[in-house]
Length: 76
Length: 265
Image (tube, rainbow over all chains, first blue to last red; front, side, top):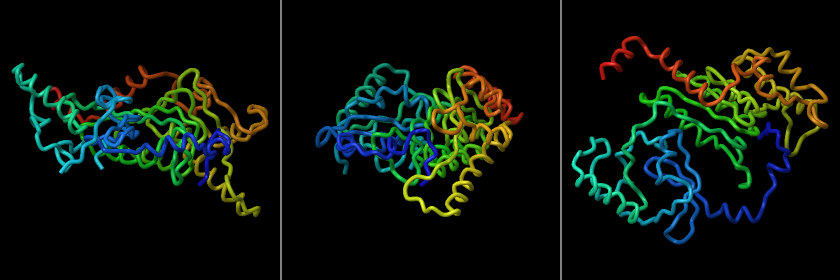
């Protein structure tokens, strides 16, 4: 990998244990065809962190806004 | 992977008790509306999933490019990253979805992986639909080829672009070949930028290797209006100008017959 960035390498590649722990709880899920980064807060609840979509209308959708708590339930 | 929601009404993820098809027109009956609202609310509570909102899909899609551009290697989580595997399918979807007519790129990046950056730039440059980029804040390093890859580019008055040589990170073998390798990498960036913008190779390399602009480093920090005067970026402007240009390009891109068809509809 060749990094071409204005950030110093030490800053880009440095690991931070505290943030690492935080990041372990995060994962990308597919929600109605949109990719959402969620953070697990309990067994069946997730908090939305980041929406990945190129459709600007999606960002106006209140259900997809960061901070929303969603309940996950297994589907049969 | 339908992260643009092209085939929304299919797939195993769909709840079984579906109040109505999302592509059916809204019922004028208020009771029905209330009921469907209630059903949607229930779905949120029960499944954490809802039907896709009925709002129309925008004909312009937008790709925000922020933080580090991440490619082959996953960067430590404290970096804010734009991931290659997220962007590429979106660009593909923009190309193949007939409802999407233009792409707006908004950059505020510090650079990142050379190969991922060039891959994204090549994908955008080869899109058949009109594209416009806006550099806000910063479009540094590998952000430069991405910014120039669009049909037309804008830079905010206060935004900057840092042009500097490519460096190798990690374990480096001290052989002349290593230098040649970096030189080749750099050549790829330089040739892409010169091919897709009005800046000359000489000027770009002069900026890249100039001394005294960056403290204890070589390269230059090019501010908005300067980037335009060097020919790297087309114009100074923000979202308003960018949207206007994109809509204008979309109109030009539309074949005559299709233009009429739109009016009839």
